[in-house]
Length: 424
Image 1: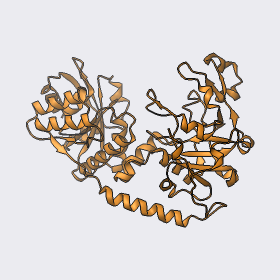
Image 2 (image 1 turned 90 degrees about the horizontal axis):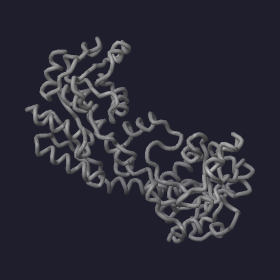
Image 3 (image 1 turned 120 degrees about the vertical axis):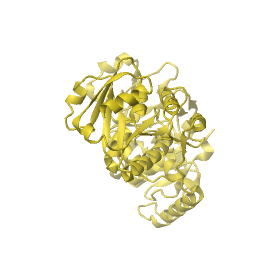
Image 4 (image 1 turned 30 degrees about the horizontal axis):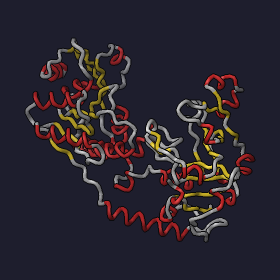
């Protein structure tokens, strides 16, 4: 098998030393399937689409008795490893230009060491040694495209599938896949479920939930288009939800990958990361999970603003460096008096050097004033850790959404206000 791998590499003009672990040798008589991908970025929609293809690839591999080979350090490695584990597909890890210890120190793993005499990318190596290749996502002008074109040039039989994503997912990737198909690649389409039926079913569920939820003091209170609380000064602390790219707050990367690899793949499911979805998750969990992104990545906190909601939404703007709006018409407000009783504290603003002069117990409250934007305008408050909604009286909590339809499925335990008319 070692000689055969060298021959496969030489087709790509790669002269390399190859070493296999005993476990990899035992899998040498099976068909080897390489899973490749360009970097996936942070788009949850793209992640979910790619996972549909990964799941299909694993089902095909399991049915065909194949072995998955994946390059160590590649963009797809953590997704491929977890998918192989979930679907019960044998896995071989390929280490490119690594030390001999990567093989000898992993006695229980199936792994291969490839040490090219002339440096080359790990993507080229993995595409060269595999019997079949499934590319779940490719961006143009990168190592993946170069490796795939080399395979199409040097391997005569059709053994390369490229996922063809819809233009709304990534237009450049779609064009590249179509170009590779013109060179001999197999176009790979995972059809989505019918979106209209999914939307109707989702709407029916929302309506039924709205009629069934009848708990708390606001069980029979319909959402209203005006509430005096949205303009009241210094009475409420406001938390606006956002679109969630990547894991939910408090969710590990492993849990996030499992959700995508094993979750439903309908259009409705693929888009469940909007600010409204974030709010629904909060209400369902009855908890706002703290995140350490704001507090210098050290202390999980939940952020609120003391500025009235009407002011926040009327003055909101798009932040290009963050790729999002600073405030959305979805979220939750907590009466300030109740929040103080629960331990909420106002933010301490200042120059970055001021943080380390604070007591360690207060550093989670620090926020740099900022250069291009004066963050003191937010009049921010923070809660260390999570916010448990069950510790508050329902009268001390308000939910807010953009439209009446957005309130479907939200618990009637809390009063809900429609605030879309406050947007600029």
